[in-house]
Length: 114
Image (cartoon, rainbow, N blue to C red; front, side, top):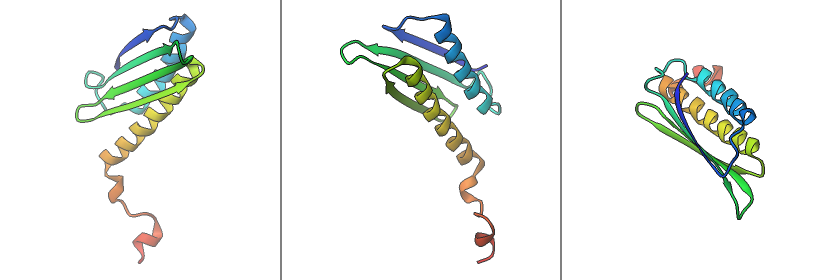
C-alpha cells in the first residue's frame, strides 16, 4: 500500500471515517500497481469550515515526475471524500493513458482506413 498522510482539522476522527477513507485509498492503490510504493505518496487534508458549515477534502498524490491534486467540498464529510477521490482517480487514469502514449494510437477503423 502506498505511503499516505492524513491531516484532520475540526473533524472527529472516528473508526468509521478511517474505514471509509481506507476503502477509497485501497481503490486508488489498485490503480497504481505499476508504480513502486516507495515512489508514490498521498497527502490528504480533511477539514470542517466552521463559519461556512461544509467539509473540504484536499488530496495530493506524488508520482516521480508528476503531482496530481484534487480538492472538493460538500455538506457531509463522506461526500467530500467521495468527490475528491473520484476526481483524483480520473486524473490518475488520464496520467496513465498519457504514460502509455494512448494519444498516439489510431482511433478505430476509420482512422486506419482513410
